[in-house]
Image (cartoon, rainbow, N blue to C red; front, top):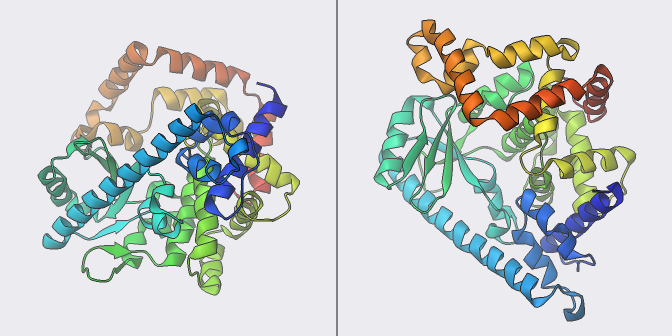
Length: 388
């Protein structure tokens, strides 16, 4: 696709999202950005934008009906998510299980309408020692366990297909020693919300810093989409933040510079700031990433973490992941580490049988990625305020 058309699609999407979140009227070709909005998990916002347009500028009837149905589905989904959370929190209170809702489960209340903050899954932070009790609560509500005791996150699926991710620690969201210490003790910062003893909430400043850590994690592991930047803008507009406390915290985490860069981009997209060259570059990178990043960006980022992007070291680590990483996917290694070579072989067999295309694509990306490309990516991150 030509660069000019990609930029036009990106521009149309930002205009529509900004209109949905404000009193502005979008003047853009909505049909051009539907697929991009879907990739970023914000298609539900398009209907709120187009219904404010003059009738003669709105999309055709078929498109309007599709956008309306999608938005109504999100309304129903959000209502059901809220209902299940209420039932879950009631069980947690009864069984004295400490829990902290994260990201969208909290931020949706800041949006003009809660369903505007679409959630593909609901993130909860718990004390890892209570994981078994949490499992019992989900099972009591008829949920299916899809991942358990296989790393830092347990996953559950409700009968109607809603996803829950239960985090036992958030250390994986870190990118330096300071953020590792911070994310490792986030639960200790949480305080009970009104009317509860065990359902807690992070102070606004700690939650905001965590959101930045989460953005960095995805940015340097394949890319991050529009929604996290939208969250930052909403927080700055509608969340009470003690700036002195927040700036002190971000300084300790080496996040001040990065925060300024992404906040400026958020104000360019959803406010009225004038874009800089870095805003254009970072904005295009995020928009082209989609909500979950791209495979090619992910491979380049992984190679960047090796010494000078050494292909041999990178390939070796992909073939023989370290024990700590393998333990996330094969819990029995915790009790019998000697099985590590067996699981390496089992992993190869599964990859050959079920992931041939992905392996071929990764090998092709490795071959195409040279030192100049890695250097350019590292320099880009540095200009974004990241010392990694």
